[in-house]
Image 1 (cartoon, rainbow, N blue to C red):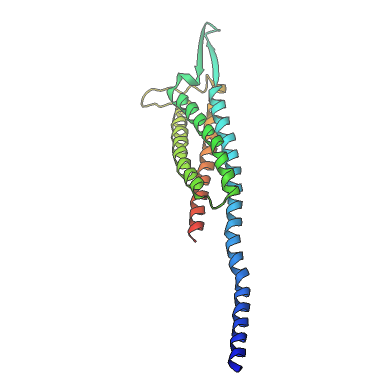
Image 2: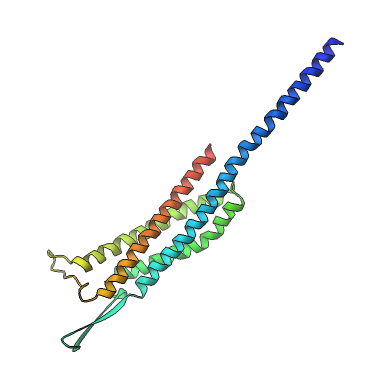
Length: 202
């Protein structure tokens, strides 16, 4: 009879210990999921901000146009973004970036609803890197042309044109600055995805 009592007491203690440990395990699983949902919301907000920046850069560059007159309006010279292939590439690249970010919002929403859906996160991570490279390349190329427009190059006898086309230079300069904002936001998105993968491994 003593043995049965001992076994019963052992079973009660083991069940009590298992009940005491169960909530701790559940809380440990809920915290990463909650953090992933927060990161998903941040990801969505960053994508919205990057869409605005990319669209603003493309629209500002695409509408940059100015006509300057010389010698009492006898000669008229027009400066437009499509006169420079680099600026044309810039408008196309920023439009592609904005279009991709709009499409990526659907996957971003999926990561908020289902934080453990790994396929969506992997696809976003890969395409974010590709789009980041495209945005950075177009922004850097346009920045080089804008620098020449402001300062010229004495070695090659390239004259600065911003004294004659001030409004045009202001618009293209603003477009380049806005594009770099989009590049920074894309970098944050890539870093956020990388941190999410590290969190998943832990």
